[in-house]
Length: 577
Ligand SMILES: Nc1ncnc2c1ncn2[C@@H]1O[C@H](COP(=O)(O)OP(=O)(O)OP(=O)(O)O)[C@@H](O)[C@H]1O
Image (cartoon, rainbow, N blue to C red; front, top):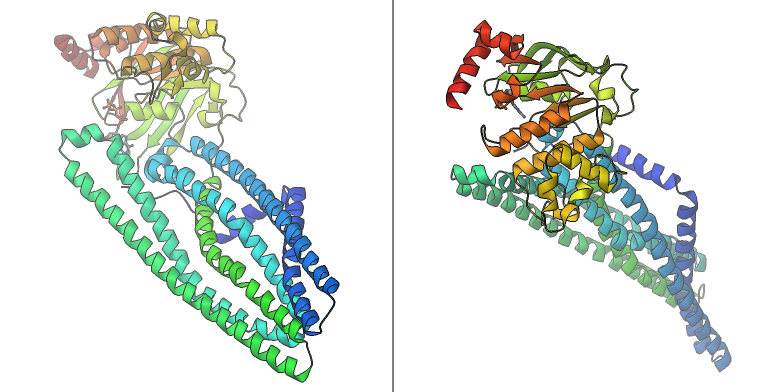
């Protein structure tokens, strides 16, 4: 379950974002509007021409006069069709570009989010934003926006034309307006929270699902299948019930739209009848007004209905703009550090629980030195390593390299190889080039050789080009870790934090990884979380942590002789291995 979801932008911030986006593309926006206006004007012509036709037929006009009207209708239809198609294309293009931009920026922002924020908010929430929400907006841009804009333009031009025939007819048509407004005002305040609730329910359902999938092993180990299934079922039922409620609301809204149409058209016909009898307007003009009004049924209904879809898309947009607006310190803008010493200075950290998990921790790793962190499970080693790497931010104190806070350093100053190594889907060589995009095949091979992985990589079905990751060749955790180390070689950062625990002590995998790590750490400032004490024995210095504090520091030999906590851990380790 999530503590708190990622933030959602308010209507004002969302509108401001949209306005800025449109302003940044003035030519495209104006062009799109012009095509829409032309399409709307061309669609009004046939109804007006039909009214003219009625009058000419009643007056027994020549066939030529009637044919002229027919030709006008055909030309207007062709121009209207072409302008509608072109306008739709322009709206689609504009919307798609804005959307592509939005997606890229949301993903970029999400990638910069501190790990803790993402952990708290839940990855499911983020996934549903860049997935379902982007899809909802994309659908609105292609299916809804063109119709919505042309409906607005058509309504304005049609009502102006009806009022141009006779202002009283315009007034009669306008009777529908307050009814439409009442319908919308009834619907919108009810729909907005329903859609928001629907989105939240869907996000919670995907969050539960993602958690269950990610934790499959734990779920199986503790026989939690039924509990997890029940949780997903409850979340799904909630999402379903909310969706049904939303649909019932929508149906009642459609009823209100029909009532407004009936009132408007009825008023135009009654007023038209009275005016035609008094001779103020012709029968043809009343027909034109009625046709124009009737012509609006579809677009206005679409407008009303799309208000609801637009609101749906608006709710999604607010969720994306909410992520964009998160106040994130952008890493990598700072200047290069003068030195490469890694310092934690009086650092205190808490994951939000009542007691801090690290208290006033201070340590310094000199340039080129390898320091091993040891301690019992839960002592705070991984937390200290994450703080040193800038993945977590201290509550108090600070982490720095060469005197500059780690969060302000260029990204290639420090690399962390953590317990969760991810192999990105795709050719293995591309996975390695993430660290240095311009690396040649030879450089990649050299990096693999440094970590002792070249031989097994060469034996893969397609060597360096073998597709790995999801859907590709599966790598063992230890091999994935070797690739992570090879990435460090390619990135070549002066400071490295290592926190890998993928190999069993004493196994061949552990020996390979330790040799690979030694090769990578040589010449760099390194903080190593020593999950196997052989890693500590080969470090320049060992720091022992217990209960979130540093309790000992010294070389392996000094600490073993000292007979303190490390000596106990070493004795226990030596007896076991
Ligand atoms: N994401 C988290 N949220 C809440 N508490 C956490 C989180 N990660 C770690 N902790 C807690 O913080 C404390 C320190 O954990 P940490 O993982 O840093 O210890 P460690 O010494 O690295 O342990 P291990 O050797 O088992 O990896 C533990 O009590 C742990 O339960």
